[in-house]
Image (cartoon, rainbow, N blue to C red; front, top):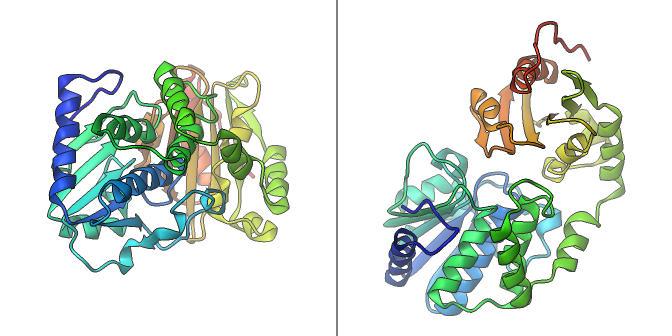
Length: 347
C-alpha cells in the first residue's frame, strides 16, 4: 500500500511494481469505479482500461459499471464509454480486479461480487479508507483525483497515452477539482493536467460536453434550486434542496444533479454548504457537502454513514428532506463555530 503520490518514493514505486506484476500475470482484467460514478471514477476506469488494452491487446479487459444505471449523459463523449457493462451481467472470474476511486467494497455495489470472484485485486484511490481490501494498493489522500494516480502509474510503466486516453484522465481531474476551483487544485494537479494536454487531451471538449451542454430542463431545475437557497449561522452555512417530483417535472435524472451543490456553494460569505435531493427510493435523500475553506465536512458525512474528502463529501439519509436538514444543519453550524440552538427547518 502506498500513501504518497507527490513524488516517486520507494514505497510508491514498489506499489506500482506490484500492480504491474498483477496486470502482466493476468489474462482477464475487470476494472470498476464506485456506484453512481462521477467523472473521476469513469475517467479513471476508461483511462486505465484503454491504456492496458492497447499495451496488452491479447488480454481481456472489461469496464464495469457498479450498478445498472447507464453512463451519465455528460460523460458519454469519452472514448470507450460504450464498452461499459453492468457488473451484475458479468459471470466470469477475472484474474485481476482493479478498483478505482473507491475506498470501501460497499461502494462497489454489484462490482463487489466480481471482486469476490477475482483471483487478485488491485486498487487506485485518493479517499481515506478504514482498511485495505486489495492485494496491492496505491492510496494517496493528497491527490486531487484518482486520475492523477492513474496518469502517474502509466507514466512510470512507460505506457503511452493517446489523446483519447489523456482526455478521459483529464476529465476525471477537471471534474474532481471543480474546474481547478476547489482547494485540492494543487501544483501536482496542474502539472498532471499539463502532461495530459501535452499528450493530446482536449480541455475545450471536456468543458463543452460536461459544463456547456446542459438540457433546458436541467437549467430550469438549477434555477429552482437557486431560488430555494437559504443561509443560517450568520450566513456561514447555505443549503438548498430538490424533491423527486422536481426532477420528474423537469425531466432530469439523478445523475445530472452532481453540479447543483456548486450553485449553493457560490453564495458569498458561505463557508460550508449542503444540497439534498430526494432519490427515486421512497423516503431516501442524497446529501452533498462542500467546504470553501479548511473546515472538514467529511466528518458530517461520516455521521450519516457517508464519507469523502475534507472539502467534498456525501451521504445517503433514510428520511425526508426536512428530517435530513434538521439533523445535518446543526452539525454544520457547530462546524463553523456558531451555536446551533434554535436551528429548525420547516419547508
